[in-house]
Length: 113
Length: 107
Image (cartoon, rainbow over all chains, first blue to last red; front, top):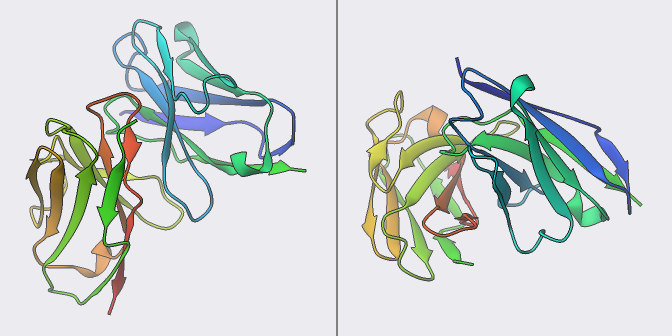
């Protein structure tokens, strides 16, 4: 069945770079894109960026200068990297299939000053 | 970016009630509007896609409607498991944008 699972550090220092991995199963990254979405504690959802099934990427303009998304199709993994972290980047980070029909469980990342 | 204004932010209701939640887009989104349910500590769950298509496995008491800039999620008869937070998402234009959420609470 379709599954996505996020992994990565739960605590990151301000000004450093966040690296997260989304490992998928039950579908191919060459057939579906993957979106990263984040949710600050107690707040709403923010669409961060997408890696399309052809490998192209698009980013939310608010994050574009700090964000990159890549993938390794052989490992069924999608990678998020975001630099220059600040405390307001503290959030649950989710990956979801491009139709947003399947979501990972999310990973809570705290940015410490 | 398209702005999504969701209302109400909070809704208090009883089991058996009929409730509606609204999302208004800042421009026409051509029915590319999804609805999600999120319970505490869980990932969002898609309920409705493209305005009025029920996700497989979602009870028929959930329905969606709308066009242009105005969209509605209706729960026809609230069940205890429906008390949660609901979000809309437009995916007509990049980036997708979410409504601010509606927290549905037991009266």
